[in-house]
Amino acid sequence: MDDLRARLQRRAATVVPLRVLAAIAIGAVLYYGHAAFVPVALALLFWLVLTTPVEALHRRGVPRSVAAILILLLLIAVVGGAVNRIWTPAQNWWAAAPGTIHTIERKLRPVSRLMGRIDTLSRRANLFSEVPTVEARSTAAPRAAPPAVSSSGSDALTVLDVTRTALVGLVTVVIVTLFLLAGGPPMLARMSAALAHDLPSAHMLKVIDAVRHEVGRYYGSIALINLGLGLATAGVMLLLGMPSPLLWGVLAALFNFVPYVGSATTLVLLTIVAFVSFDSVGRVLAVPGAYIALATIEGQIVQPLVVGRRLELNPIMVFLALWFGGWFWGIAGIVIAIPTLVSLKVVAEQSRAGKPMQEFLSPNELSRYHPKQVGASLGLLRGRKPLP
Image (cartoon, rainbow, N blue to C red; front, side, top):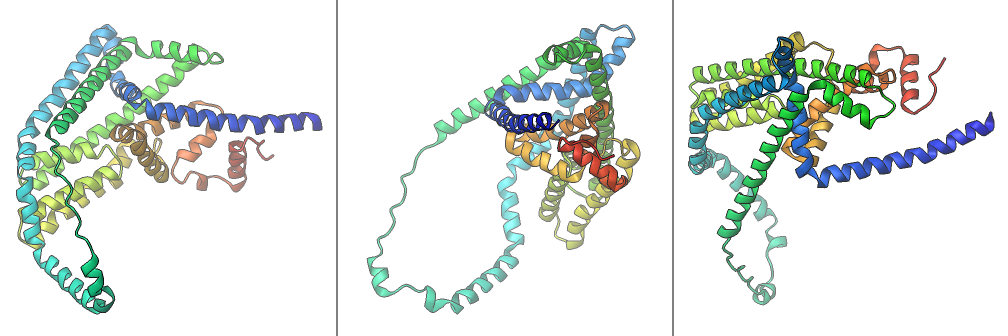
């Protein structure tokens, strides 16, 4: 018995470093190969969101390939129409950016003067310690101005390269999404079972169906909630006299897909626009105050009622996922971070040994269990037997 325990301990001590090295290697491949992996990951996300309506049409007798084409065309039409509606006001705000900066500088001039006076008093207080000697000033050589380098050619090449990369990635996302939707969950289950030899296709199909159903329902509900928030934001901005209210409603709906960061970004943009557009302090403060009220109602009342607590996530894990996702893959990583956490939680619910992961991802989940059960879960996380 002691020999068996010793062998198991040696095996565990060997397996853990190998797993760490494998995780580091996989992370390095995904990081340096982001140009190839990001479109595939985005296609998987779109598949999870769009597979529910495709399967609904398939159950009514429509072939999966035809249903996939129809849903993708509908999505492209909706996105194109939204972009077309906000394109002109967005261009106007972009063209007015220099004037906006000048207006901000003009309105902040009293604050700048106050800060200048404080800085002058501070420099006068440290005058004797900061003024250089006559010898130092006479021996100091003037710095040569750096030569001006024309960067118009390099900027044009950079823009062309970025545009080419974006178009190639967009086409890749559309094609991979179309193939995934046309193949359906059975194709993905067979591929997953082929990679994991110890799992049958039936079990993989059950897990994929659960992930597809829960994630699709979750993001369908979130999309409806964000649409409502966008319409409410546009209506309130129209009542408050904000210019281009439809633009701010669309931005509020889009940014709200990213937890915490999206709402904060919308709040900052609305505050800046209100500061530039209005001279009254009350009207300036009314704009961010109204959006904070709308975001609070959406986050604290509407979303818990519509989505429920089943797929709620730990706020710390959400923040870390957004942070590392943005550092890892940029904007695409931020977009993929939350669906990845939701999928992990659904997979944990479908697994016999997934209780620790489910508790780890859930908000305040440990407080709902008896301390003995918490210790058992932590023991499972460390690879130990649960307490009797």
